[in-house]
Length: 117
Image (tube, rainbow, N blue to C red; front, side):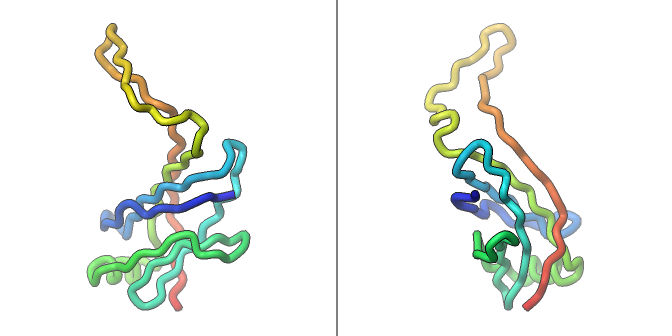
């Protein structure tokens, strides 16, 4: 199951693009099935599974115009699990190539239909 959903950024590329961080309860959880809706100026991400509201944000005029025009939005999702890796506080560089080690992240990009209320 989804623990929390945080909308980190909303911008316009070809269509409305929403960057989302999805925190899962367990590494084996795969139940993130979003549905998108707009009511007034409020953009909402809900769960198809139980209908609960996961996150919402107010759109400005330009963003609202883009989502109404396309009737769709692009979700750029970064999946994370609390406590799976702990927190990386110190970055240990790899001396051979000068790069720092990074934790694995799961990213997902999809275009979803938006319903209007």
